[in-house]
Image (tube, rainbow, N blue to C red; front, side, top):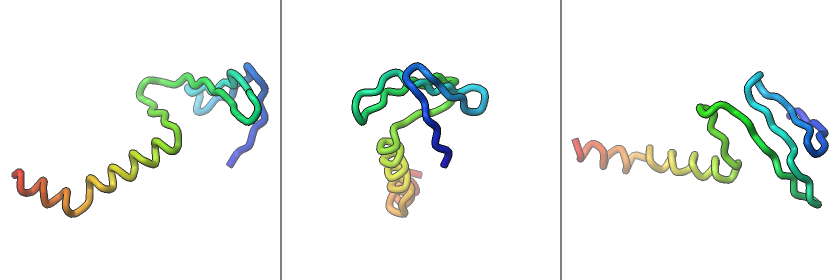
Length: 71
């Protein structure tokens, strides 16, 4: 993991097309702004993990059997 220090209004670039800017710092909370192409999906990690779990459940054997029944 790369750890960087940034102050308010400072930014970092990822892959020449994603810019992350520190918008605000309040106590232990940091507000970030992210500029990225529309095709780049951006999720909070807890939401991303929920999506991954839902995808795993959708691919379970029961779901596949239900899909076969439809066909």
